Length: 225
Length: 246
Ligand SMILES: Nc1ncnc2c1ncn2[C@@H]1O[C@H](COP(=O)(O)OP(=O)(O)OP(=O)(O)O)[C@@H](O)[C@H]1O
Ligand SMILES: [Mg+2]
Image (cartoon, rainbow over all chains, first blue to last red; front, side):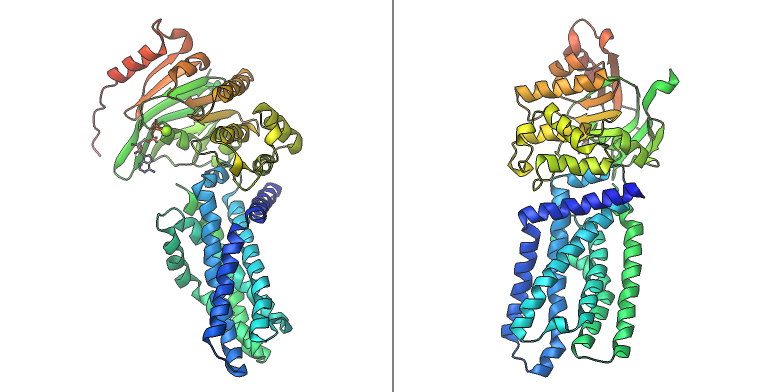
């Protein structure tokens, strides 16, 4: 167990340290995310009611597409310089590698969210931080998304067409997480009563658990040659 | 005798789709041997080393390293292996010492900082320890890759053409590192096309051709006309195998 945690920590540390240097992954995710919300801002002339309705959709479109960019890069870096072999040569459980990569990807997505939310709040003149529940939904949604995303990115990175393969594999699978996240977010934004939000939250939580366990079980067979 | 056998491969078969690359390969290495694996391009040397390194699963046959079977007991085998492959397996956005520190944690190396310092000295990169690997030349990356492979003091060192891209100094550094490793009773399997160089170093020479080890000779039994002549004869004599019904 200590070996597992040590290896997991090493992978997370390595990804964060490398990213802090290059900022390659975060900058492409952020540029993309900010472009999306700017374009929505110009394209949609919204009154206050309509705005509350579309906000959660716009936010999740932004996170999801920016997230795909990040996932692709995160595994491509390993594959292209042969570092995936380096990881696989280490005498550690494959799932430590998987969780290390998944946690790093989750951190990147949350960093993007932490920058997108205030920018969005200013652009659209709403305070997204007023609802503590929304932040939880974003965390849970991002968790489910990166759990499946890391697994499928490891699969897609083997193929020559990986850049288009990842979204094609990922989006159909991850739809339950997204629907639940969008519904729960808009519930909080429209200040609906808790009993209307709760089912979505439960669904989100259930999918997070299911997806994380499946990814945990099959990761080894995905990276094996 | 039997218990000093460290690597045991019997009837190893590897195919990629319909293409059979290794066909019934037998290979035994005793502890402390330094085996040079020779063979023409495309003979399957890299494929074979990847199987020994547990990176690729055999299609059939038995592979065991230090008493542990592959692929079943892969984790135990991995702890005992150091691998230098075609690619350096290093992260460009980390410094030399950060790369070693990362791999050291993956292998659970004790007294890591001290060991990282030792290894950097050994491969002659102490002055560049805080530089990003991205800024390293090919040869410097290869030096660090060698450092990465010996970091956890593995029992078996697998090297795939490790001299490629190294300058004269670096080649000598590598040879010195390898001789030190071998002198401490470690086992080395190395592929190479540089016959003159391996003739000096290895204790045994195996020729891989047509998916099998077709000839093998100990250094003290080398014919007087040298390794190159032996290698040429081995390839010429390697008869095409009888195609077994698929
Ligand atoms: N992933 C793969 N898929 C299909 N064929 C492969 C794969 N890897 C290797 N091969 C084939 O296996 C054969 C042996 O390749 P390998 O790289 O092991 O040769 P090698 O002895 O290392 O050659 P070299 O001296 O050029 O390094 C080649 O014919 C190659 O085309
Ligand atoms: Mg090769």
